[in-house]
Image (cartoon, rainbow, N blue to C red; front, side, top):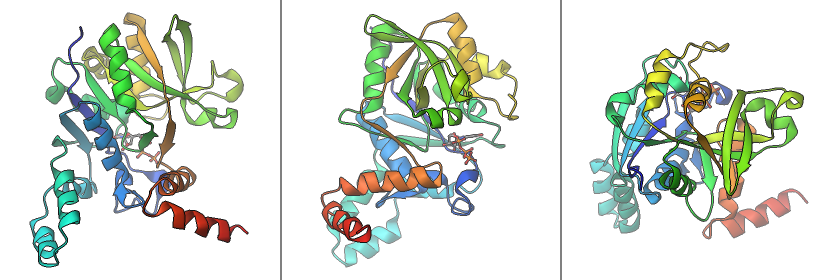
Length: 288
Ligand code: UTP
């Protein structure tokens, strides 16, 4: 039996340049999906997977994330006066989801650099990583399934999902082989040309990492984009130990760019009992 994973790291310090001007003063991770910010879905997935301690890596302009997961006494008092008990309960639920901590990245020098900031907090334990702009819509939480692989094997796990050929150059793509029922990651390439890609399986924003990743990240040089890339560190880790893959069951959605965001909102809105039916009939009328 492997050590239980209770800590998660959520890097949310990126500049969100693909979503400007919306992200000039508002964190990309706070973009609303119907009426909940993206990062709340992520934290709910973490909690549903058994995570009790979350470290969010933030930066300039990301205060809204801290405020969202904090109590708001003035707002509660105002709602109390109006007799709005349901929403007060929901707000209290949000602020007591998990023990949430924050650390600033300083300069956004890449995902690898952001994760390295978690070293002291995580200590010598395996931990989960959730990227602040990737959502997985599934019956069972994606991270819970990844934890099952980790508890069987004790090795790092990365989540992967097939993408269209035209989408391959946007992602980290893995070379993988099947070993019985397990998917073993042999290598990974950052944003390859579709013709040169080793598969169509893209890495998405869910990882289980072992603490030896920190020593590797510390030595990882910035890549061609000038950033310390997690993929480069994972390749080094993969030369030392096995890395397992988890094929996502369900839908991987992102809020990182305009088109993906629009699709994500529609996807979640249509499935909501309160707004879904009316929204669907509006869409039907609109495209007539
Ligand atoms: P992205 O590359 O999608 O985010 O990183 P970005 O840099 O904000 O986006 P663009 O390309 O400028 O539009 C994935 C996740 O890693 C975090 C981001 O906040 C995002 O949640 N990240 C990225 C950091 O925390 N620090 C970094 O230096 C880079």
